[in-house]
Amino acid sequence: MTEVSENNIQHDSSADRDAELRALNDQMKRRIEEREQLAEEGINPYPYGFDITGYSKAIIEDYEDDKPKTFSVAGRIMTIRKMGKASFFHIQDIEGKIQVYIKRDDVGEEAYRVFKLLDIGDIVGIKGYTFRTKTGEISIHAEEFELLSKSLRPIPVAKEKEVDGKKITYDAFSDKETRYRQRYVDLIVNPEVKQTFVKRSAIISFMRRFFTEKGYLEVETPILQPVYGGAAARPFTTHHNALNMELYLRIANELYLKRLIVGGFEGVFEFAKDFRNEGIDRFHNPEFTQVELYVAYKDYYWMMELVEELIYQTSATVNNSSVTSFLGHEISLEPPYRRLTIADAIREYCAVDIRGKSETELRNTAKDLGLSLDPKISSGKIIDEIFGEFVEPKLIQPTFITDYPTEMSPLAKEHRSEKGIVERFELIAGGKELCNSFSELNDPVIQRERLEAQAKLRLRGDDEAMLVDEDFLRALEYGMPPCAGLGIGVDRLVMLLTGQESIRDVIFFPHMKPE
Image: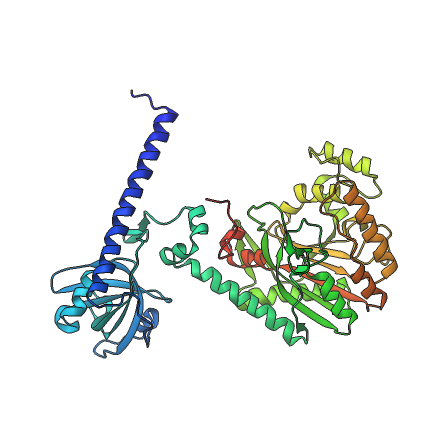
């Protein structure tokens, strides 16, 4: 038996990569030569436009035998069978694929010569009439043909074969990391990926319409901020040269939206790109989308009902169902959702009671549960770690987790009937937080005390603790009415409603390590 060492495997792998690179270089060299040949013959490989009158799916669905129709179509060549005086190829457009039959005598000598120089991946325009081939495939018989874009880099075309009447795809462009890095190739080779992003757009459009129809105003607030706030997170830092000042990419838009409530608006929302300088995993991307909503004269009880209505109606509209499949679970989004305080949730799933415990007692509890904690974190973070590790992943059906310790929520209003906690909820579904909401703190004196307490946590080494924002405090001193606030992680909601297991599958261009 031949012994195979790790070095042998690495060598073989390196040799395979070298061979692939040589093959790629040969193909690109040939395509560049074809481009030059076209240019020498006076044919522009990159013309300026093409008028389209039909798309693949509709053409195929509306086809009637013995009633040919003429269309102008355009798309990328995905398969090609070059023969003598006539050939077949498939193009892929935004709706799908359709076969084209091209004959030299119909399109002319010059156009057919151009066709002979083309490859899979090239983008072409065709004018012709519909017909059904002898094998029954609805196709377009080309009468005019034009090259619209010469592809210099070969696309990794997936191959298909039929086994027991079913199409089996192999050699697909399936490596996740490569797909995320080269989303443009992913969308070409795996066109079904487009549907996730079409649905993402539909989700955002519905949510925007939902808020607008209730009379709330869509607004825009600064992305570059002199003081970051509104969440517990590390920011990205930049520098403004003209003003010679440090600025931060926002981690949340909360504090600016509250300023607008102070100014007299009674309902404002913003779909925002926010940025947090944190790790990357299945549920986190440094740049993410959330929508925040603030409504005057309301509280978190009212907001729970609004969230139930929003999530249910979004699913019913976009998916035509109140049930979604996510991570192997069937999740019902039909209200009402279960409500459970964070203390009761930890007691239910961990069999420990955190109420009234000191920081030392909480740390010992976490240790008994098997958690290894940073010695710098305080009581609120310890509770958050316990909940995140042992409770959150088990909350599959939508559940409102309510009434958090004050230290965990410095921007939330104190609970109206219980000391030491605030009026806050998070909606958990599929084992992950979807949204966060408060009865917003509007007492400027207490808010200053809370932010100054956060500053002390920063001195202890908590680099996610909030800063004291003097302008925000000044705004509160003018008076902010009672207010309910809400933040929804749009990317996570899209994951839930499309059944995608990673946030990278719902963001066109997720952040990646350098190649």
